[in-house]
Image (cartoon, rainbow, N blue to C red; front, side):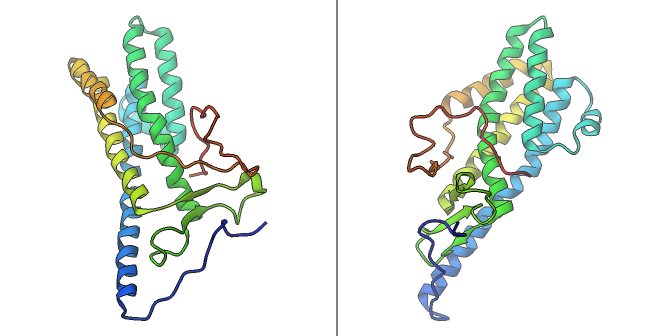
Length: 235
């Protein structure tokens, strides 16, 4: 199994001090800055998830941190899903809990996609003609570590894609802030609920996962029902 993605070409070299080199350096700066902004959102999102877990458990944040301090985003979302399921079964106001569940699903389904890209970038990095090929040959690939061809996952990376993720991260933090306010302040429940439901109605998530070839010449994203939560790299 080749260690490089299909279509990979080595980085092209430009004359030192040339306009091409300046353009490439400008691209590299924006590319790496975009990765940095994307990654730095996640600690804040994790902190907000701790708040959500504590509020779903109806315990102070310190207790939530004691239980969930080593839990990362994917497991925090799993725990929140389990908690809201139990709350629906035990609460006298099932409709209220179902409403909260819809908010969480709205956030978690997209956050799972964003977190999957983040994990892939952090653990596998990027290869390709960074800044030297018009942004057409940059990919984050696990090919060098995949057990078999069927386990290969490759994500084309571009500044546009990174900016779409950053925009969605902003949407995720906004929605989580509404959820936290609604859970923490009963008098604000309706107002915050209306705000997140307006966001759900009026905002379209920008990041869409790329189709993955199933190594038999077919796309996994076409003609197949998508899983509720995508498999992600270990954090």
